[in-house]
Length: 127
Image (cartoon, rainbow, N blue to C red; front, side):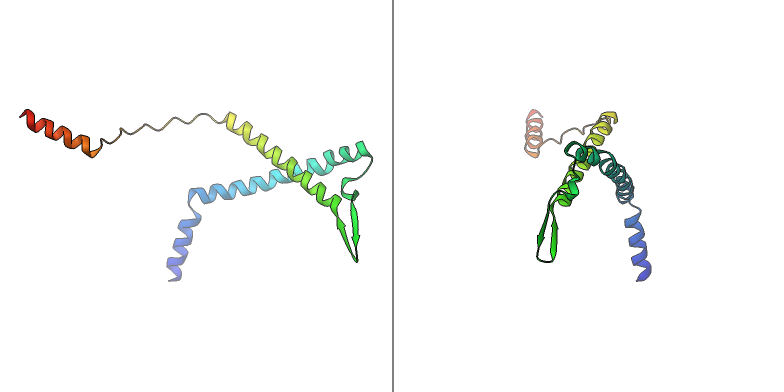
């Protein structure tokens, strides 16, 4: 029972699409760190310098003992939009660089049964 489970898991884990997905996740995480660094260390300080304010510290609301950090949320949304845009642009470049894969040879269309039957009747009438 355990041997069968292990062999099924091995077959699942070694499928090409699972390995491709794992590589994509690792590369995506690394790319996300690069873009997050760009946002945190370059873009947000520039945005803050324009308005001479730190976006994360912009809006804070005190509700009882809790502090709502709307500025930090806004900065996170901006980070997401920049990361999404960077990934979109990277995918556009990759798709342009990707060579067009040769189209699979189209299989001849299967003749419908009624046409085959009509041809058989025609051929038998000719005889």
